[in-house]
Image 1 (spheres, rainbow, N blue to C red):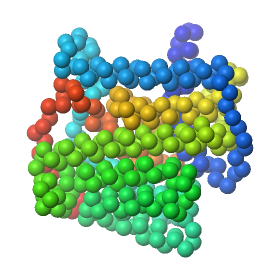
Image 2 (tube, helix red, strand yellow; image 1 turned 180 degrees about the vertical axis):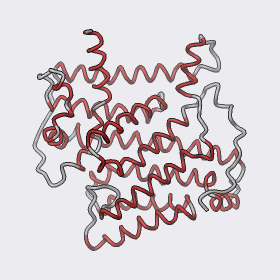
Image 3 (cartoon, rainbow, N blue to C red; image 1 turned 90 degrees about the horizontal axis):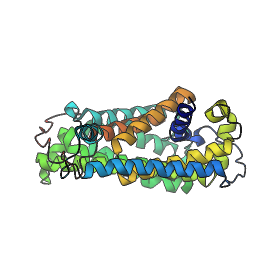
Length: 351
């Protein structure tokens, strides 16, 4: 019983922290107190747990990296298949879901008067420009995915000009990552883009497949950088921000609910920052991306349940990105890298 309890606690220590991923959505306008961490026993155990997670994911990546040269037992090969073999949804459905979810987020923002996120409020003199940009991004996706991608890239570069740099960085990598990925995926899911890229000599399926793989890589790196930035900005470098959030929503600190009174809110904030940074680093390194995307999907689903429906629109694109990463798996250096090369190009979609 004791072993099961320790295992349960270890699991939630790794999973629960990033339910605070966008704490600034909830603390806008509040005074952030000074707070600092001490490397006591609990925080040391947290750091050890983060290194353990990196080690496990690295070991899984090592298994798949040698799966084409080593004769693994059948059970190991099944594990490699489950964790890494690409899944190909019909009609590139995973990418269409990203387009749909991003447009839904932008539509909700227009209705609520937000720009990309609840805590991004434009100055009166540029509000109309922000509205126009979001409308163009929505309408452009009907005509050209690559055009929407360029618009998103421009928006990402515009963010540091109209918002404080720290606040802009909370969204910069996510927005520019999706924008660049749109440019890469465009000829695979939009006929107009397929025709345009054909003029550029990028019409063969071998070319578009390579672009899709680059798009997946960009999304993985961008989401990793986003998580690392949120961990540093909202927790590790400014723990007071997350501390306010935990004090207002103490049920997030489930360790105290389990009877561990010595596990303070500040300990929970430290664990949140360390593991959110670790999740981002693991994605950046490309270690067991399917496992990590599934874990993060569970985390953001938990956020939705605990924080309420108002957090759903802002996380919709992230859910779509995680779906793409889950389906992509990780064919690099594996026995699967030369498989599934006979995909048929999509002759028409979104226009």
